[in-house]
Length: 166
Image (cartoon, rainbow, N blue to C red; front, side):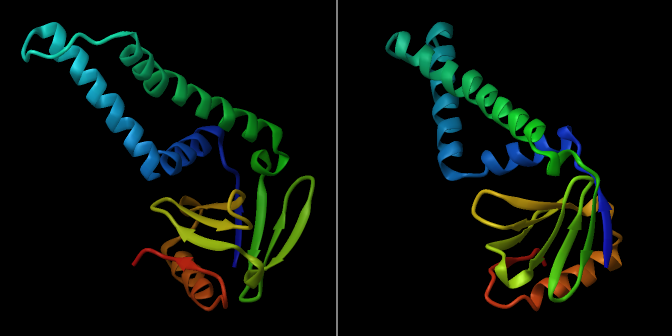
């Protein structure tokens, strides 16, 4: 099976934000910021008899709601623009034994059993080489029959955790 793909910056940002904000610690931080915002709003509306928010509540809200997303975005921007692999058009050949990737500046062959894990997302297949680096395959580049064939290949990969959607 052959796939030709190019991941845009916008697609990359959406993917990484969705992966980042799926983590339990990030959800907890969002919960803290929502509760802090509620506290501030309810205090100033005089709906409940709440203690007056002090500077720490405002700083916490600013850090979680503004600074954190900006830091994540700048990290994504630096990662995308410093990597030739992400910005290049890639041609991938998927076989039962390996994945061959040809970019404009590189060629790579990797055996499936050397992968860290493989995860199917709603719009992506993520083939992790380690816990931080993944080969991205957008599902929009695949027909439904190619997705089915690709899943068959992935189900046969030995000794690699494969998380597929049903």
